[in-house]
Amino acid sequence: MKIAVVCANGRVGKLVVKEALAKGFDVTAVARSDNKTEAKKFFKKDLFELTKEDLKDFDAVVDAFGAWSEETYPQYTTSIQHFCDILSGSDTRLLIVGGAGSLYLDKTHTKQLIDAPDFPDAYKPMASAMAKALVELRKRDDVKWTFISPAADFQAEGERTGKYILAGEEFTLNSKKESIISYADYAIAMIDEIEKGNHIKQRISVVRE
Image (cartoon, rainbow, N blue to C red):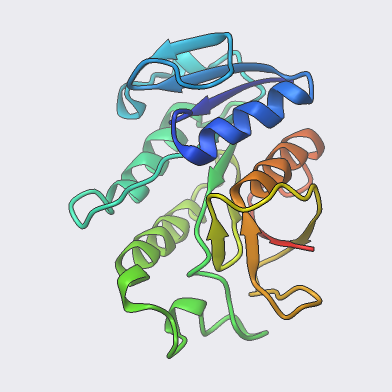
């Protein structure tokens, strides 16, 4: 399996690279600064400057883009649109590190986690931006995409348990009534999804077992 991890120097990206290498994948890291991952194959390029030619030989591309300010939140949508445009009509799969705010709280899929009264105000701008990006992504029938939402409590320094629950569009709690997952376990789930390829043109979610 030949994969590219874009924005690989981020905390999620680096762990996805690590898990992919452990699986024996042929991994190329892509970032706009010097390589900080374990990947031996690397090229330096800004996400928005990537071309169809850059990605044509990969079985899967991981979009590990993250935005951390009001000015850059719209780039969740524009980055996904750029990926979709350069992967359009190809067999290369696009797997996106998503957010939890757009997970549904009801069976009718009318209320999202971001609408809950206890959803932290500080996270609403980012969650809204990621939810909008997913709406736009759903319009693309020309790309083999998968959007993977983490649990609500997405822990950068959380332990790697190697176990997780694979869920769908609805907000899911584990047996301890928690919505929690570490970056490390999320990376495992990402690599499992690349390997199995069971959720093309779908949003899925993961929570610690």
